[in-house]
Amino acid sequence: MPRVSFREDRCKGCGLCVTACPKKIISFSDKLNIKGYHPATVTEEKMKECIGCASCGKMCPDCVITVEK
Image 1 (tube, rainbow, N blue to C red):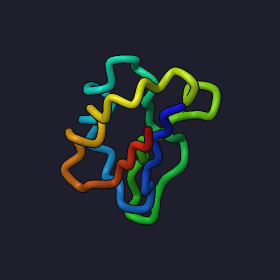
Image 2: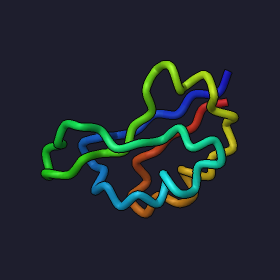
Image 3: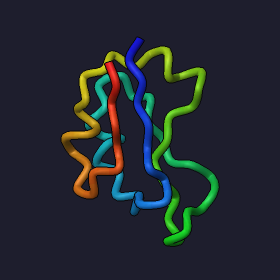
Image 4: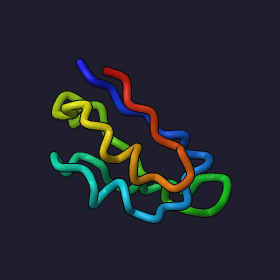
């Protein structure tokens, strides 16, 4: 099963990954990271819907996303 993870401490909340995800499972966290941004994240229940396409990781300008297949 594919798994996507985010280095939330480095995310600047640009939202490119949110728009790139074909399954629309990425959203912004309610909490702030160390830089003061709402980082992108995927909840555990939505993680099951990930298809491992890595579109989110390709769009991320800061390389905070890792997709494991």
